[in-house]
Amino acid sequence: MGDTLVTRRTTRSAMLLAVTPGLRWLVARLAVEPGEPARTGCDGCGSPLRPESPAWSALWPAGRCGGCGHSLGAPAYLLEILILMGVTIAVLAAPSIPIAIGAAWWVLCAVPLLFIDLRVHRLPDVLTGAALAGVLLMETVAAATGGAWPALGRSVLCALVYGAALLVFALILGPRGLGLGDVKLFVSIAALFGWWGWSTVFGVLFLSFLASGVVAAGLLISRRVRRGSHIAMGPYLVGGSLAMLALLA
Image (tube, rainbow, N blue to C red; front, side):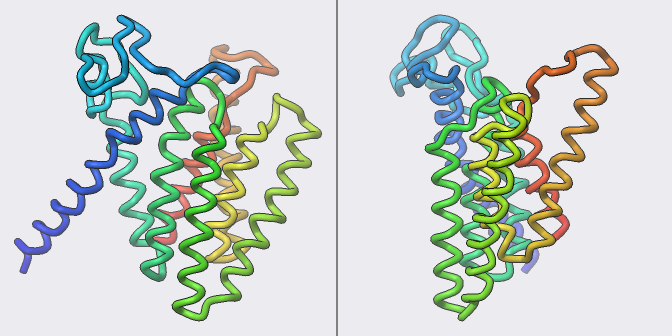
């Protein structure tokens, strides 16, 4: 029985890792400055990002172009580690199969957003929108199959209330505070964690701002940034969400 369990876990991990080249492709394509077209090739040697090109090897865990060795997209192996960890704790935390699928889908959208925001300080709508759509779809399935309509209503209400509050916060503070991409990302976070309750959504927000504040203070003390410097908030929102999933699991 132990061997069977190990085999199943190995199979599931292999299936999960099979999707990571596509996620690396998204990071490589979308990690560009606002207003610029999606990346189509290696920045180092210009090889096109196509299967027959050396740049295609950047979609594997090492994350480097096979022609010039230039790092393209997410850092080596880190995306795969976060995907395996994030999906595992999402499945363990979820109270039902549809919610597990929705939480896992959110992780698959959020981890690429983390690396894109770290590189170019932007959160593309195609991923924030997909994260929200997948979460709401699977929560609707969970409500329809399990009669959990109050939980679905709470999730939608959390997304609306927290989204509106953060939008006002972002408009007041301007670009030095939250960006609109951060607000859109947190709408999907609120929709997901609203299934567990209002306090869970607040917990994610608290953990995210606490972590960003500690890191920002450390960067200021070490003089690696100056007052008024913009710090990407997306990674902290994703990190706070993963930490909350781990606590729920």
